[in-house]
Image (cartoon, rainbow, N blue to C red):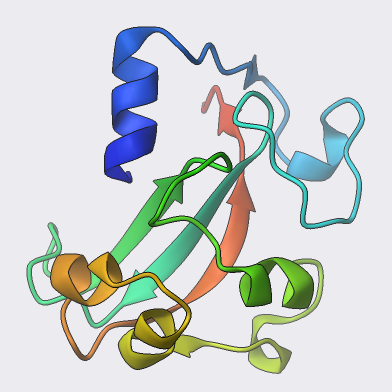
Length: 127
C-alpha cells in the first residue's frame, strides 16, 4: 500500500465500499475504463522480482490512491490501461520506466529489478 493511501485509510478520510461480488465487473456502475475513485475502485499494481516480499515468491500487490499520490499511476499508465485484455498484450513496466514517469519511490520500495503491471482493485469479502 502506498504511504498516502495508508495514511488516508488510517485517518478515516476514506471509507471504501466492501463488496460481496466475486468479480469487479459485477459491482454497481462498473465500467471498462481506467477510472478509480478510492471508494469503489483503487489503482494498484502487481509487482514481481521484489527481493524482500513476504512469502518468498518475490511478488507483491500494491494499492495506491487515485488522488495526489506520488506512487500512483502515471499519466501513461492511465492512458494505456486495458485491464480487460490479456496481460501478455499489455505493457509491463520496469523500475526504470517508473523513474522516467516520475515514480521514483518504486525502485526504492521494490528494488531495481522489479517490474510490474498496473491493475484496478476493489475491496471484497472473501469466502
